Image (cartoon, helix red, strand yellow):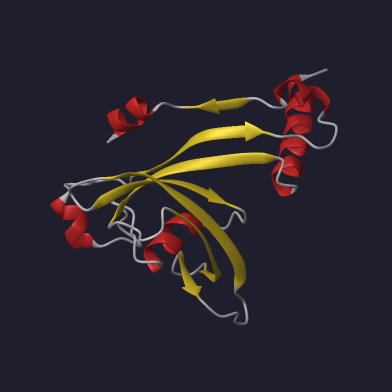
Length: 165
C-alpha cells in the first residue's frame, strides 16, 4: 500500500473517530483568575466572523451561531491569581477554548486576541499558554489499521508543560 493511500485511510478513520467522540483530547490552559467551581461544563453559542478572523460568544441561540460545549477542571490555583486548567471540548470550533474561557471571565494568559493586554504585559507573555497535552483513544467501532491505538493514552508531563512557560 502506498504512503498516500495509507495516509488517506488514516485521515478518514481519525476524522470519523473525532466526529463520533471516540478520541478524547485534553488541553492545558493557564488562565487569569480562579474559577469558583473546581470543574464545570460550559455551554454557549459561537459565531465565526471570517472577515475579522474572530469568534463571538452568546448565552442564547442566535442566527448563524453554533452550540459549543467546553469543560474544565482546575489542576492548580496559583498565588499570582492564575489557574492551570485541564480543558476538553465536545464541539471543536475555531478559537472555541480561547473565546469561551475569556467570555466566562478566565482569559488565557498571552492570548492577544481574546485575552487582556494589561494582564499579558504583567506576565510578560508573548504567546498564549494553551497546549494540547493528552489524547485518549476509546474506540467503540472498528478502527482498521489504527486498532492498535484503542485504549491507549499519550500525554506530556506537567514538567514539560512548565518548560514551555
